[in-house]
Amino acid sequence: MLGIELTPEHPVDRIADLGVRAADAGFDTAFVSSHFFNRDPFVACDRLARATDIRVGPGVINPYETHPVTLASRVASLDEVSDGRAVYGVGPGDPSALRSLGLADDRGLRSVLEAFSVARNLWAGGTVDHDGTFRASGADLKFEPPQGADIPVYVGGEGPHMCRMAGKHADGLLFNGSHPDDLAWARDRIDEGAEDRPDERGEVVLAAYASVSVAEDADAARELAVRPVAFIAAGAAPPVLDRHGLDPDRAERIGEHLSAGDFSAAFAAVTPAMVDAFCMAGTPETVADRMAAVLDHADSLVVGSPLGPDLETAVELAGAAAREAGLRE
Picture 1: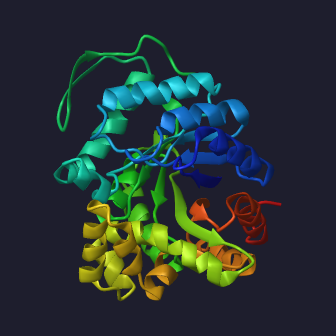
Picture 2: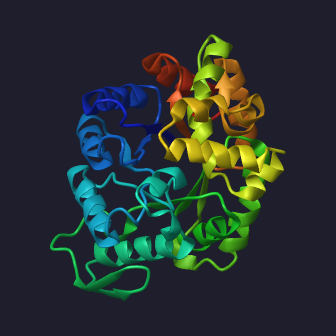
Picture 3: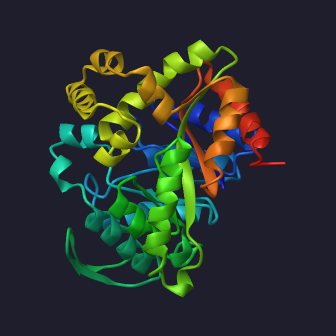
């Protein structure tokens, strides 16, 4: 898989145009990020499905803002309108955004696992009675998605338990990492989980969900990288911060600023070391080298936003960098 993350901070029509550009640049999957303050990801996914022939899906969406049975129905609907090209990226969600909704305490591994396990049951035509992190009684779908229970499920996460869970139960792990040290660590965790993986589930895919900012002007690319890095640093698990020698108190302050909507203060608190740890930022040559380094440990790559100062050009540059890194002929 060579995926791209498209962020619906832009109008949906522009998302569709970027999706067409991404398909032409060699990307085969588009994940649409999910935050309450942006446009609806499923609306954007529908438009992408109609404009391209690549796989599309939310990436990642959380099971707290919307009931997991409803999420399963929406993904199944997307699979229907895309003729079987839906993917389901589900995870514990951005803590700063969930904090704004009073949902930060609901984040957890069990809720993510239950959400996609129940979804698979529903997609296969089952009736669900569930009493766990959420409740459902006699829930079923009145239609069957083209892929049935085989809609690919990618867990978005970076903590050790979430990585192991994905290795055991999911089709893939979207690991929010741009540095080879992080991907090497994630490979070990996912392999630990895969030791108990049912044979019928097949191989699990480790995808580096890497923040990328690419431009011919390296300084401009790094300057733009500060925005996604703020969100990544704020949500990074303590072991991730420790691995890169980053200050957890500073990361916590960044999260507090984001929750309060003070984005300027959050971005100003991001350090160059955070950019190096959490983003592939720079020229196309630099980004290609960074991609190749993580692919020593990951199976595939999702190029995350912001992509670059000029978004349309950056999609093409990222595709070219991926080819240089060996992801496409």
